[in-house]
Length: 210
Image 1: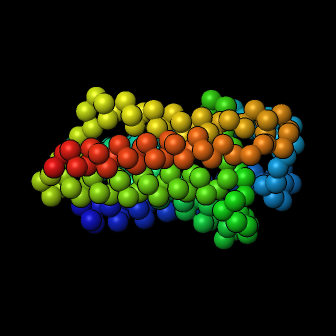
Image 2: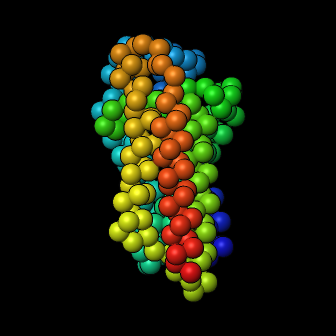
């Protein structure tokens, strides 16, 4: 399992470079030297359908890689968590290497476009990804060692609620950015509540599954 985790992490790092390269090309083609806000109104309009399709295809590729790597349901889910987290963090690492951006983890970024624009400081998705990497690796290693991990109905409800709170924090300022306005302050209390609930539920299920 350690070898599998390492191989998938390497794959995610390489895939993150491909994603970062696409963004570099888009920035050059549209003569956008930085990622500053406020965004020009309609900046994504010329490529919006293709960008949405690309983001959807990216998720499909991450899921497919995890699905092909193992046959056990929870291990597949755990591997997806790991791959997603590594890919997301190294996407920013490669952008920083290529463009010198983000200059700091506080820089704002357009995180996603499905179904609406997601906006937040770079540290926020990186924090989510770090949690996914840790939880995913822990679950996969425990199950490989003969242990188990289960959420149950209550656990799934709480984790879904946590995810929705985090997504809401990312989409909170999205409409402002899409209109070409300067986004207001990131709703970090909402984000923090989602993170605490998500990590707390994971820890509760981890102890409960012994």
